[in-house]
Amino acid sequence: MIELAGITWDHPRGYAPLEASTERYLKQADVHVNWHRRTLKDFGDVSVEELAVNYDLLIIDHPHMGTVNNSGCLVDLNDYLAESQLALYRAESVGPSFISYNYQGKQYALPIDAACQTAAYRPDLLNHTLLPTTWQDVLGLSDFVKARKQFIATALCPTDCNCIFLTLAAQTGNPVAQNSSELISVKAGIEVLHLIRAIKNASHPDSVNWNPIKLYNHMASSNDIVYSPLAFAYINYTVADCGGKQLKYAHIPGKTHSVLGGAGIAVSSNSKHIAEAATYLQWICHPQYQSTCYVAEGGQPGQLSAWTAKQDNTYSEYFFSPILPTIASAYVRPQVPLWPKFQELVGDLIHEYLVEDGPADIVVRKLNSDYRKIFNG
Figure 1 (cartoon, one colour):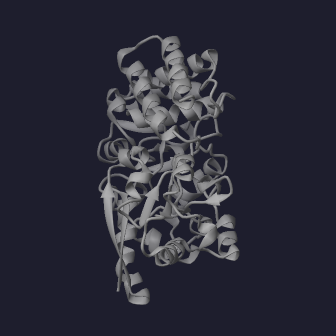
Figure 2 (cartoon, rainbow, N blue to C red):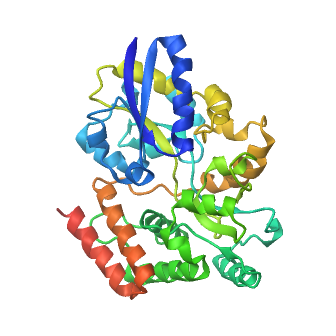
């Protein structure tokens, strides 16, 4: 029996379907995968190169692709999967998920989990006819529900401050640059920061402490938050046994350019069993498995067939169908080398701006200054 080590993140969506797959795969391939967990923050920020030293299989975030390409820490799946197999996963891509793991023609991962920032609401507390379609509508809804002693809320911990900044910059026609001159113009950056502050001021006061998981846990367990305009979607909160009230997901205000999330599964170039790891990767990402066992065991599938299958009406009505148009127009985050290092600075600066109510122009100039320092060495 061959033993493989894998690393994922510590939410049931991230580990439950992987851990459930191990015994099933062992019986058919005599290969056992031992899955380990890291925090959601580490999923986005910790170096893939460091993880690839100790693990054969890695669940990763797509902004790391440029750094991965420079280090050579992951294998190019073009060398281990047949073109017909890659063509299948390309055709099965949910929005730009497949291409987000491609860098300079090298395919470093397959999408095992597809997501983007979406809106979410409690259908028992908010009628769908009141869902906002613009950011001005969001602010108006906040005023409306506050009169009922309720709130809207947004995930605004530092990591999510970075992502909401990217979404709103792209929505306003000013996506952040991927060169070494400046991140965003001062005028456009101020506009985006002012909008984020307005959203923060309209939201539940704990929003600055929440990532999507904490936000959805609160929404499901309490009755004071009726709506969230922008946070990464989690399928687990749409089922009746989610531990609280069901959430339903919806298209974001502004409609397009929601930041792409999700996760890819990759193989370390340091692995002693690259071929076996690549075979497991192909097996667990196959549309048939993703449409059945993977979603049944708490996973958020990365293949289109699973999103369009009709075997579970709750998933289809509450999750897949409402946000498939959102992810189809999703914005792929920058992948240039050093971006993972820089995105932490972006999130921290914007979070500090929101908490301390500082001047927006100074934040934008600081972002641009740090951007130039990092990307110009």
